Length: 116
Length: 111
Image 1: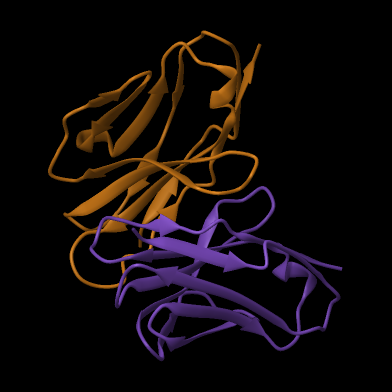
Image 2 (image 1 turned 60 degrees about the vertical axis):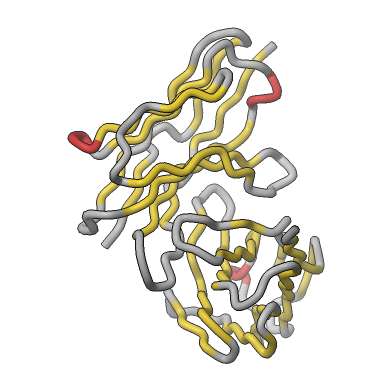
């Protein structure tokens, strides 16, 4: 069975601070995808990144960066120089690769609050 | 381009009443379709998925059912709502593994 754990229920930082959101996953599959989504107060899920299990390269996109470590089954997300607009709930998710329905298994989310 | 619609956006229903939430996808054919629920303070849970017309699989036992009468239409239903059915319902679709596109969601409150 797949499982995603986001141990940080809520994080509050002051604007311009860096913040890291943790994600630890469990799966028996050797091939899988990992995702991060942002959920602003409107509720819609905004896709941020997808990573496949073959690619452990870290990725940077503007102020966002992701650290994928298969050895520790972690896929952490860092926001550099945080801004108030970054305030949202962030979800980490996992799905199997290949055939099948591959619905996503989500963590419970981390509520990020950026204070001005 | 592909778009996904859900309606209604919000719904308040009494306990014991029926439910019908609709999801439609435009601009694609034969997608996999999914229903997720987000209960208050919790993550998203996969409820149903469908790989084709009239092909529905349930991930968790519950008071809800799903149907796919057309290729790009996915309906979530209940004959009698429970208080515990309250939540935010999201529909999603995908064509190839590793992608998942979500609709705007329906916020359901059961009183």
